[in-house]
Amino acid sequence: MERPELGYLFDRLLRAVIAREEPILAAAGLRMWDHVLLTALARQDAPTQAQLAAETGRDKTRLIGNLDRLVELGLVSRVPDPADRRNRVVSLTAEGRRVLERCQADIRAMERELLGGLPAGERADFERALVALAASLD
Amino acid sequence: MERPELGYLFDRLLRAVIAREEPILAAAGLRMWDHVLLTALARQDAPTQAQLAAETGRDKTRLIGNLDRLVELGLVSRVPDPADRRNRVVSLTAEGRRVLERCQADIRAMERELLGGLPAGERADFERALVALAASLD
DNA sequence: TATTGTTATACTCTATAACTATA
DNA sequence: TATAGTTATAGAGTATAACAATA
Figure 1 (cartoon, rainbow over the protein chains, first blue to last red):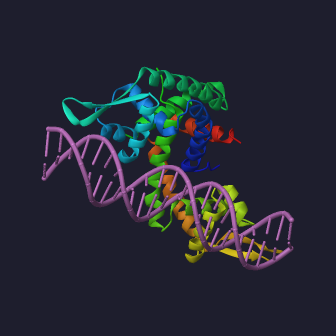
Figure 2: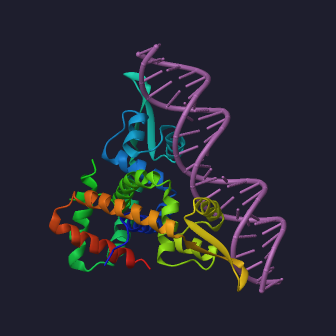
């Protein structure tokens, strides 16, 4: 019994996640890329925009508009590095962290429901395998 | 211990699959959408282009250029339905089926290697969970 | 009139290259 | 000169609406 190709399966699952996640983010005034950036910045400040772009896989030129908006919303600060004023240090504001954490809580709930399609016993195994597989790509 | 979000994990895995699959398809002169269409047509002929578009998630207007090219390559036939000449029946040619099956064999090999990152015992469970989860979305 | 396939248009996202400011 | 950030331009992919043929 042949299963569908991985590309088909991952594509369907990713689309399902995105479809459920976008309304959550929209309720906070965010789009997907905003969420990616906030999540990366929650781990640590970005010493340069180029590094933030590399970390998140965002094009460095498209990053700019996102940051403009996030700064406008008061979720992110972008200040020149005194040591080298070509660089701009990007970091979360307290409000940015609050908004992110609220979104993350809603996303966790959404994910629990999505994975509810799996028998309870298999869910933890599946999640572990998913993380291991993603880690094996590096 | 928190795991990354599902969106992040599925995105990484899908990109990894695409990166490994595109060279395989390119070697056969195909792009990703061509492969999606050939795969759908391998299951059964499409009685109308609109139905093929709906099945594959392709926009019906963008489908046209793909079919033009696949017909040009001799992989697909597109003939008016005598019963209702508004419709065009789309089906695989023998050559189309040959090309598809060669790609599928290479893709299976690529997938085995990709999933090799998982301990052997967990792989079958992971694949089953993946299929079950995708099926639960309908 | 309604539907299939097609074409044309505009909109979004992305990639490339030029520009500025700092070093 | 080299690098970080920015801006401008063009390209690919997509969605929307109008059009032609058939029913």
